[in-house]
Length: 91
Image (cartoon, rainbow, N blue to C red; front, top):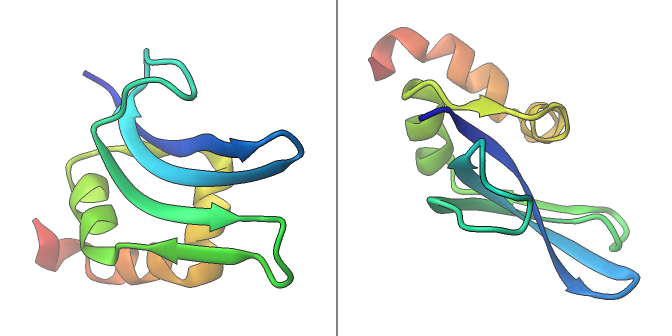
């Protein structure tokens, strides 16, 4: 099973917010997911970005692939760089 870390849309029409989820890559965008690992709200100023660092590290260590958008969000928050520096300790 190929696991992806990606955005799942929620919210009403023209007022989206997103859950960052770990899911099987074959599932639809807003379909079933394995675990919620964060939240993202682009409509606020500044954008609200929140991750559960332990859950993200767990899924990245297991081989989950983040989408391009989630990769950028992880870089903005600084989690991606922290994971790369601590990669050997997590395995």
